[in-house]
Image (cartoon, rainbow, N blue to C red; front, side, top):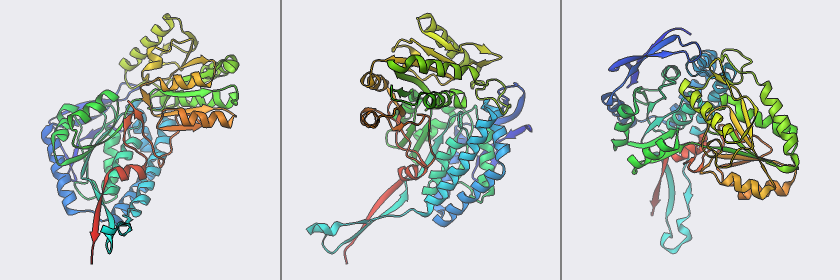
Length: 473
């Protein structure tokens, strides 16, 4: 990857920050660029630019054309984006290419949904006081959106915030994770080349205290859209209660396998759900509840599968599990695994760190109160808990303070419908991995997993105010 010196992007121009810091390849450790460090003054200048942009406006047809053009440009530069993601975050290159493909689709969906923005007639004449009136709603942008994004999907999760905001007519101020800054700069280049006018997308890199806190305090920022930890997300909301918040927070994803399941299919899907993106996803499978009648066979299938997964150099097309985002994250998760085993859990696969990469790790006989069952691991580790029946499995699924996606594998329609009705989750999937997400489907959690809904059409609606207009001739 060519060395990159990235600046801030404010009001359509690249701007020097107060300082610079190095950006290093996650796998090799070599410096691959530098990035500007912005301060509060830059964060405020970005809001100033966004305010001017919204005052000038951006017609719906032009928004749609820009988003569609950006999709084409991103697809054309796809390999460059994928290699940037892998270099900076350590994401396996095959997964990075998959993320780019999804990001192209996200932009395409946003372009299509922009053209569908419409109000609706309201039948006020259905009541006596509304006789003779004509009423309709008019969709209007809520205002400037501040997007704060994570490292694990540094392109597609960014676009799940930026693309719906632009589609809705909201100018964006944007702070990426400090572990994924270079791909953010590439994305800004794409939007500029696609013809996005100055001020509609502003990139400010720096510390959360210097960049995000000024946005929380600025009344001109109407929306905070954030993906990250529950602790940080709820703190953002507490700090800015009058703003709209779309929060996609932590999770601890569960899957149920019953005696009536296709075990080979369930084991294959469970392995993918637990290990894709090196387990660094909000919907990575972490807890499996397996009924006793099939537990031994399922454990054998899944344990054998985990042992075959390729891990190591993320630049290798065959690699499934690469390094976690930091050596500190690796050490912390390894410590949790060791403590869980010391407490009596049985290790079926993995458990060691080899050349800086945590092996795909599978455990069973884990205490339901263990940290690997109760908290988000964010790495390639899953625990199997054997249960007597579906009722016990559902109690286990619902015991978590998190709830984003959950799934069940069963050939019994009654079991599937019962689980769908009783599972506390943003999404329930039947005979599909709980890590599944299509970019146009509604996506959001309940309990400590957040609030608000993403998925292009649904995210656009979150960012719109539907103004009521009533006429009486």
